[in-house]
Length: 401
Image (cartoon, rainbow, N blue to C red; front, side, top):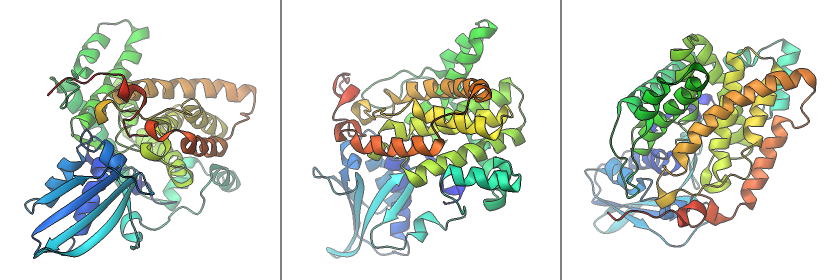
């Protein structure tokens, strides 16, 4: 498996596969090209169907600027649901062409190219959680020890944590309407104000929800956020980090350790299944984020290895089959609300697994649920996988520009 630096990335919203991935691809494509008349970017599948709402054309044109780029939304689909063909022209002749796949979480693959340029080397010797668990038991390692041994990225994770906190802070201060035809009012600041008027029992849930809204609304507006594991699910882990740091007084070191372990579970999902909504539906994004967040909360609560696995498994299991049907192609409805619900579910999963694991062994392993999610994603209809051709996307009306 790759380093967690390939999972946690900082970049502009609203979609890691539709903005961050294309941005990285265009930057790499330009490379050493210095004398180009214009570029073309042909978008296929989900990139074409939801590219406008996801700001794909905007980020491509911005990245190639000041050289002009013609972004062409193609009607046909190719083998990969997030495919784009980039071309550079000089004197009406194409001098360079790439076929690029945006595979989720900002990661890209270049057809026929050197994939090491985009994905880096494997740093983890294991790819299934059962292998990792046995290694930790045999060597008397914690999961934090395991990550530190094979992927020593404490400074990087510190920066990721800082950006998560900043994203929530910025979102709590922002007001107004999110861009696009949905004309959706920002809610994070109001939710935060409501939370501070509630009694203690309700306040914690509303605070977590307001933090998830804050990060998700920043993402929806094209702000700088963290893929965790994607930008569509970038409100879950930041909400948890902010809540436990600001409201519960948990140290930054404990929280960055929790991000390492949460990232490890996200890495297993990414390696053995998918974190792309266009391939696996929203179970691959929000479901994966909930699994990561559940593991992170378990670390904060100092739970044992069995309980951590149970919690992460539970986070994914109860998102199986979740569709990706963004209204208007915007990462807003149902995406923002789902981030808040998943953040709350992370806390509940850790709580339940802590006590259930004392009673009996979980019959569903983490590897089992990842395999099931991958199978389920293949069975979800294409209309319900980030195409905006079905589900909520076809029944919620859009306002005219």
